[in-house]
Length: 354
Ligand SMILES: Nc1ncnc2c1ncn2[C@@H]1O[C@H](COP(=O)(O)OP(=O)(O)OP(=O)(O)O)[C@@H](O)[C@H]1O
Ligand SMILES: [Mg+2]
Image (tube, rainbow, N blue to C red; front, side, top):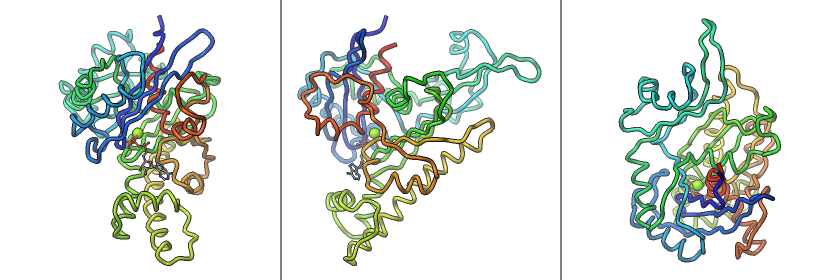
């Protein structure tokens, strides 16, 4: 039985955000969306390092936005969670999941007794010697990291009912439901955060490749602040104002433009490297479309540069595209502003439907 409502909670570097969805017969409605900023350093590289500050922000979020409940689905994306394509001999899925620690202990770079493991079969194959085999994605997350994350949530009085990979949330909120399972367009979804960028390549909603990059918009701000000797907040507004266009007559701005150019290109090179890595893997089809979300995707000129580097069409993701909009209390302008930030919490909540 599908839950009637679900709330997705995204703990990002710049803030905590949550979206509540209601699942009805006629469709899915966005009931609430809210966010509260986090102080610098509370979350580092996708990990909660100051649990008290995170708990406080979540409490404020629940005080400000009238979510209907306390059950939440939480996302993780950092260096302590890995996703790999792994082939495993076929067996009933529940048995396979039980035997995962033995099956994968030599394939993951962490001790299995300190890891939370899950497996998402993508297809079934028969190997040359006739063995029935699953090809799927193995997710391994370091238990301590997940527990620290959840502790910050429970300390805020909430009840985490599920932990999901942030990249899977992005996939759920952006994969076109029309072509689910139809093996259509090869698409790369890229959620650009402040310090974490989630990449998921999928085909008709089926994930083929996941990469978590510890890089994002804040690295560009850092480069600007350092090279121009300005404060972080000043560099941040300069970045928003300028974007990645270097066409400026003022020499001071020109210098900043070059810094932006270099830092932005370094980011794009990393993204492209990940996509190239995937497309070079056996059996991979070329990527036909890139869809970007996340605050970092707002950087003016980023999509164009990404297109120039990959020669793949780049679009902005619309996390609210397939949702009915309820009484969120947000104006149309605010909705438009928060939409790129909503892909993760909306996608986490969508995971509560099944
Ligand atoms: N208009 C804009 N122009 C350029 N960059 C922007 C703009 N708006 C937001 N950003 C950048 O977006 C980034 C924050 O994105 P987002 O809120 O998605 O990250 P987060 O989820 O908090 O962090 P993470 O996912 O990395 O943990 C910041 O680096 C910020 O500078
Ligand atoms: Mg984020």
